[in-house]
Image 1 (tube, rainbow, N blue to C red):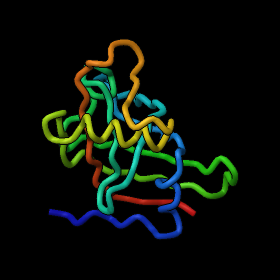
Image 2: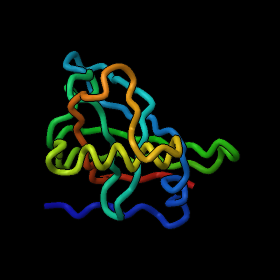
Image 3: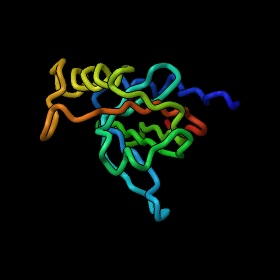
Image 4: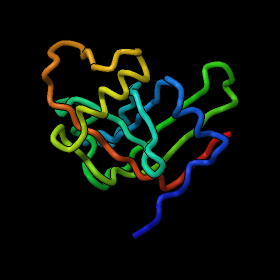
Length: 136
């Protein structure tokens, strides 16, 4: 089993600020699907969270290749690309609801996620293990 590639210290600040992440997954027809999402970093994995019924969720299974890209809004030359794979998927019973609430605090200042549409949508948290990392 491969060891996760570390995120350079010089780019970790991008995860500490409310910078939208571009998440790219692969559709069943082989074409990329890229959407803006909230994200964070737990020291090993990039973590994203989404409703279980979305296209991005359907595209991500354990082992699926994904890419996340963060670009500093104040300096376009400060960015991070993480090419990796989904190492683990956690449901609400295993932290997905707590995770979306934590992301809500980071991105909106609200400690309880106020979702778009129905608030009782089943959430999933995806732990992405970095395989290749580029940034500056």
